[in-house]
Image (cartoon, rainbow, N blue to C red; front, side, top):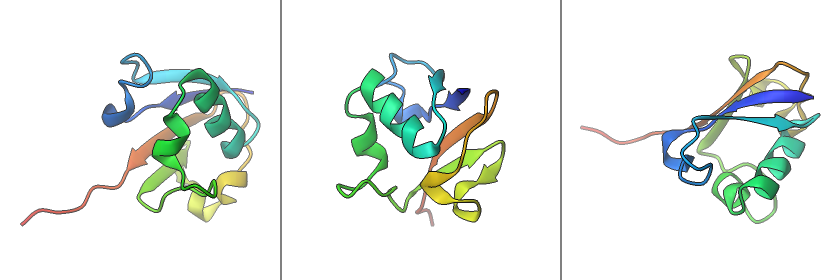
Length: 92
């Protein structure tokens, strides 16, 4: 399944300054593993050592939060658009 992945600005250095990349994957887990193969170190930015997504990383498939779907096991289909969004906190 070919999906489009939107890369957040802080991670674009890892993707050679690309804001979007395409990936062949059937699930979110496979997508993360594929991104790691193409861009070594990418998975470490998204996942804990046990492979679970870091709590401050949000992933959306076609504007739906995977936390309300099947998490990392959520299936992807060709043409899906995936957004990786780091949570932002702070302020006054």
